[in-house]
Length: 207
Image (cartoon, rainbow, N blue to C red; front, side, top):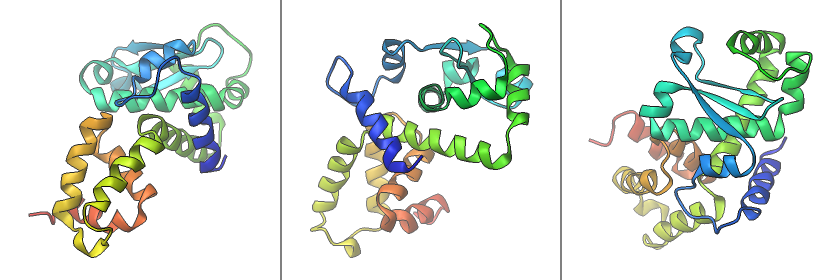
């Protein structure tokens, strides 16, 4: 799927919600409204080296319990990411899992990942991450905030450096309740010219 298709699907989803979109997006509540349930699993990462998976036959999202309880921003992105798999990739996952069943476990998921090619896995995961970013940082709201900030510098990129972008990011992280990593990737995608500045911040050149 193209990025534009992913954005269109997110916009369609948000337009169907029973309330106006506000930030930070209450991703778990929206998922529940759509019939998807989230279940924390103890020691998922420690035992299997992945933090989440889905059951496409029952619309369940499973997530590492420690992440769910203690890493709020990361957990929100994980839930959105897996929600995308349920919305857009269920048939693909069902084929990989084989026969329909009411329950699947971690070993089933390991087998599924082993049944697809690295390229299929990469495409599948990239799409879900882009979709999750569009859901948690709705394009209209996101661009309005950043564009308004940009206008405060008379729309002159030469007036914007490390300190200015760092200040913007400090504002956006709590606005959307996402991690700095997720925010950085999305900012670079929406505003490529900011990319070098973000990389400089990441490399510790803001001092």
